Image (cartoon, rainbow, N blue to C red; front, side):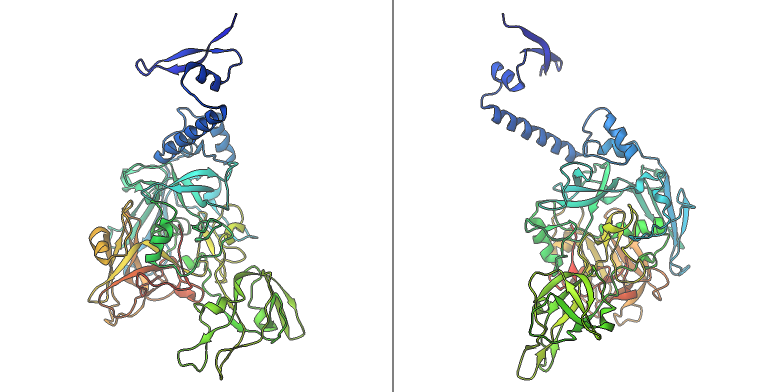
Length: 591
């Protein structure tokens, strides 16, 4: 007699919606049951592949919709909360279980009322201390003392929905998490709600919370809300400036050389290679750091917290000319003191200048990177009593014999400072904001909530365009979430959202000016300078490079500053001179 193991499995009746037992033979596998019942025909391998594919498809659909992976809170979720180790299958409940409803607010003064950069912490933000950290010094950070889970973040791998919203596919605690290959690495925290209330003529109130709050007019942060209005349980942004990954695409990964020569227009093409929802990071990635700098640091002046890589500019000719090939660059003892071990440099030679009587060593010259292209400084050793050897992370050595450009002009072999590679801030202690080595020397990138900024290059806002007006002011257009980005002026003016106007300098000459106030659009996450300031120590303490006396035409949104902008740079710095298709060596982007 064949024994039947009744009730060992159940199937849902599509009519009654009830689960009924099905009989299975003792020791019979799911595949064997399916074949016996006639619900599947094929090999066992095909069955296993089918089950795996269907499971992955279901999980992907669930994650995209931001829905719960189960109808109950698993034990694993509680373990993850206790250990602060969210996994992909616990993300939603992990965050929702920890929401506190606390409201964090900072008051910042309008420049005309009070030019100070310093704000006042209010509500649940009052009394919380924050000092940035480095890789060796842990600053005071009350936001990570365990009582404010909204500020806790982890790394994740993410993909993007068709509307551009990111969703996680693995966290750093999952076995399939990766930092190389065809993946993007993001910084993930719980979703939050915010408002930038500028209705008072004397001050703005900047407010965030991990729960909705009608009293303060809070809306979902733009990265947490899909184009159809769905609010996600998480907030994900790219952790790093983009570089070319092993799959040949622009990726957010640690250990990549920032991809240079980006523009508003080529970003559209470059990121779309990854899929429909990929356009490159918009202005909101910068607004994100502005927001958290104000809440935690209570300041409009980001450089009072971290200088960024804004004062690390050098180009030196080889101090020793040699026909022998070496993997080091010779510098005088004095010059070598300005080189940071671990930083990145290029070695090569320039080209004839426009008048053909000298050398153009601009970093945009191809051959300035001929022998070493943005490579790491490994160590510095004594070469002789007057010179040092700066050893580089290269396999093929080079000589330092000048290159003949013409009968009268020779180009010296030259070393140039370059951008920091992605992931340099991963060495900062714990999950704190800050820079490796120093937050104040102007030579290092920094991170805010796990996102890296100021690597020595402008970041282009992929979704934002300026349109010059007859009085030198500039309308600011931003693409709403889900709208295809465009390089067409007509399309931008008709389909993008105009969030405001950058005023011209009152001098009537289209001059640059210090930024006193910025305006922020809560619906799109966009921002723009809205009032003139006075210096690098008041107001927003950053410069607007106004783009001169142009009276028409669109321009790309170049944010933050680069290697030698110095005190002009910062989170609200903006350069308005680049046409939408302009590329340059210090124009970079993020996903």
